[in-house]
Image (cartoon, rainbow, N blue to C red; front, side, top):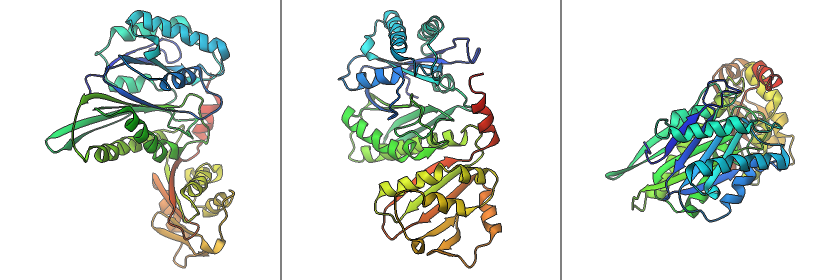
Length: 390
C-alpha cells in the first residue's frame, strides 16, 4: 500500500533504548501536502520551522524527519539553531533542499537535542528506505503510548480504487485546538493542494479538534496530510467519497488516541445540542469533557449525572433549567428539567460500566449540535505524569 512513500526508521539508543524513535519519510515530487499545527502560543522549534515552510510554495522531492523523546520546545534560539544543524545534516546526506525537509519532534519539553545521536539516527534512517513500513513509522513516533495507532482503507470507485493510510501518536497533553499530538496520513490520489487543505481542516475540526484526554495542548501538535498524486481518478463523486473515507480514518485514529490515553480505560462521547450555535454547543461539550469530576466518575463507574449538569452550566452560554434533557446511552435521566420517572441509578450504573459511555445533553430548542470525545481520569494517569522525566 502506497509503495511510492518510502520510510526509514532507526533508534538513537537513548530514552527508549533500542526501540525505534526516529523516522524519515520520502514523499514523491508529485505530492500535495497540507499541515495543521498547534495554536498554542508556545510553539516548538520544529512547528515554527514547518509553519514558515508550509506558508510558501512547495515543489520537488520532500522529506518528513521525525524524532520522539525530545520535543525541542522551550529551548529558545539555541533549539532553533540545533534544528538547523540537524536539517543541514539530512540535506547534505540526501541532496534534498533544506526547504523541503519538514521536522517534527515530540517528547520532553525544555531539553536541548542531542545532536550527535539524532543526526546519527537520521543517517541510519536514510540507509534503510523501503526496509521499513507504516507500522515501523507508527512505532517510531511513540512516547508514552502503549500501542501503535494505525488505520487504513482501500476504497473502490467503479472499476478503480484508491488507498488511505494514517498513523498517529499521543496519549497525554491532548486537547489539540488543531489536530493531535502527531499524525501523518497518506493517500495515493491526485488532489490539488488547495482542495487538500480545505478537506484536512474540516476533518480535523470534526475529529482531532473534538477530543480531549486532559485539556492540555502540546506545543508540538502537528497533523500532516499527503496526497502522492500517483492515482488520478476522474469522477464527480471522488471528493465526496474521499472526504467520507478520510473522515473514517481520522475518526479511528482519534479514538485510538483516547483509548490509549495515559491510564485511560473508557471512551466518553458527549453530544450537546440546542444552543444558539455549533460553537456554543462545542464549548459546553468541551467543558464537560474536561471536567475532572466527570472523568473520575467515569473511571469509578459512578453515573453521577449532577457532575455533567454542573460542568454544562459552568460556561458563558446561557440556558434554562426547564430546557435541559439528559440521556446516558439510551437511558433518559432528565426530561425538560425533571428527573425521568423511569430512571433508576442501576440503569445509569450499567451504562457507566461500558467501555464506551455516551452522553447526550439538550439545552434548548435550536438544531445546532456538537460532539466531543474524552477519556476517563485514572490513578495511572497521575503515576505516569508524576514520573514522566525519570
